[in-house]
Amino acid sequence: MFEQARSLAAGAKIIIDSDGIKDGARTLKPSSPVVLCCSLSIEISLKLLIAQEGEAAQTGHRLDVLYGALPKLTKDAFELYAEKVHGREFVDSFPSELREHADVFVSWRYAYEQGGELKCSPSFLYSLAFVLNTFIEDTYLFERNDNAWLVV
Image 1 (cartoon, rainbow, N blue to C red):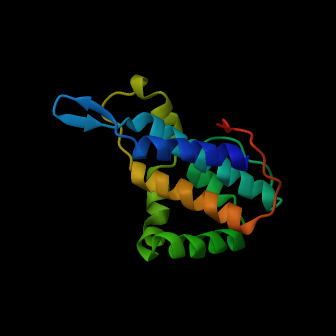
Image 2 (spheres, rainbow, N blue to C red):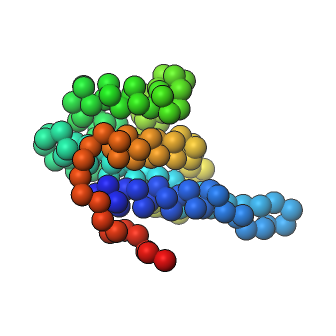
């Protein structure tokens, strides 16, 4: 699970770091793959944390529900770690941002079916995916593998 989540976050980073595409005088970077990769990375990371802590397996895509299924000690440890990485402002805004982005994977996965403009913060999603990945890597011991990676 970790390698899948990490690979998805890395895919988003590659897009963010790319030169994008030219559209007249503008340079565009695709938001849908970034949002989808980050939100799925977050989902898988939260499900991994739930499993690592011995909690009942969770289904679904709602990020707030998945985060809520974590034991308090795990949430406290994660928020302390996130504060060291992203600062107090990130942690203070985390509950409201998580609620606002709770269903982002479902809504953006079928963006073409939605009426109107979809809103989210790709920077929040990328920051959360990144800090979850590093928190898991620094906190838990598990066997690593090359699943979800193309070795070049």
